[in-house]
Length: 92
Image (cartoon, rainbow, N blue to C red; front, side, top):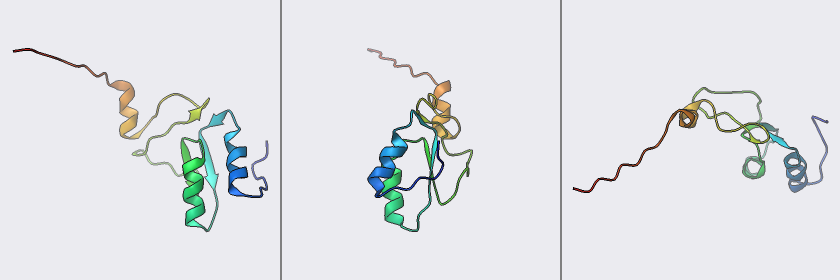
């Protein structure tokens, strides 16, 4: 698998990246804020790093899409695996 691949336009790059069975993280290097936003919106990955990589915060949810895991670790969303919701209805 190649780490860096040439592409003709952003949609081709998105198609190639999303063709993988995995989606833990993706990295984008660009000088264009609008290109970065477009890629972030369309890439199927749990974390998208823009102009950096592997910068993880314990307050941000971490986890992948597709075959890269179930659920999230860290952050507020990471607590959801340990919670169980109960509905109570009482007629008085």
